[in-house]
Length: 533
Image 1 (spheres, rainbow, N blue to C red):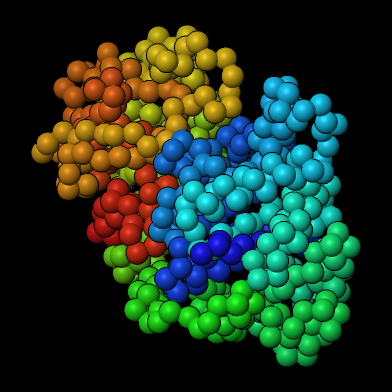
Image 2: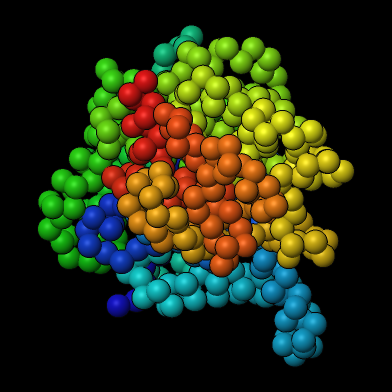
């Protein structure tokens, strides 16, 4: 069967939830037993998200095959419970690089290379190649940015062309927009949506569905007014109102008849019986929000806390673990650069330090890791939090003078954390870290083995520095154990303090493997220990 395409665009402003809308539609199709996947188009000129500041752009999500991708790829993985390859994140830089390379090789046979058809053809080819290679029933493509942005025009033009080429039963458009309610008036306003759709139609795209973000459910009169001025059926104007959890959005859309309408527009007859799939998903969604009376307070001490989306996968992983254990997770984000009174950490049931790079805020993390150890507060350190926990132990327990990381202080007297050997001749920053899934060997009879119930696991990585093996004998003599390794013992992957209530550090990023209903083990054990406090 030929793949059907659903293109998701956005209007009015960024941050309305195109990624959640895309993921929710994909989930509904998966529940209907369809083979489905998602693509995220990012119109920026960065080759990938790897060198972008998470406070500006949100988390950099790492895929199994080592892609540094937009955080929406993480949304797709969590909703669908399937790995998304890095080629599903398409950027302007990737497209233009391919076109320029082809031109230099003479592949355009002397033609004047232009946006249309050469750039748009490259965009279409990338989309169709994924659909063909993965034998998909449906491919949902989210076009980042906002309609009217200059940088997204080539992508929107390519999507418009695909509608012409595939026909109306091969492509549908979903436009995510906004109907704000002003406190002074109390009325749902439709003008932003009207103008956004006008801009979309101006470039030749008529949306089939409108996913309208709003605080409260769209009123019938609001739907009818929007439908009248946008040439969209009233039934296809969908209320995307606030919910307790993003995992409730598939049900909200389903209740408004989106699936029947999608199948009708694509010329499909009826839907596959999905009752079992629905029961499973609704159980997962309800578990995440139904434990308000059993709260666990977690302090997340990091460098990028001014934007919650900087650590979006960690936030989700904590909630996945809480759902499994019947706990509601209350997260406070604490800036490692500004923290001075570490006694405030005693208010929390557990302390988590997520990933990061660079010297700024590192001393606050080192002091936080030491406080958690001394006060016997459950601690989980991820990547940077793993490395700086080792430095904290080196300073406070081993009394190593000037213990540090060469990332933070290049001439440290005791470089407990040092540059990876294969990074010493690397000059570029983009795509040059140790990235993607790597096999890890866990020592027997350790906390790590109990956490994972295995001596062999595979986890995703994103780092340039590692533990200096010269110091391991000193650490282990004084009670800190390095309980997992990779690359035939060359790299340390986990540390633990057996005498502590729960003190675990991991070089890898376990949050990228956590899914609703299938929480990652280290987060489950961390929340279990924090609950016991």
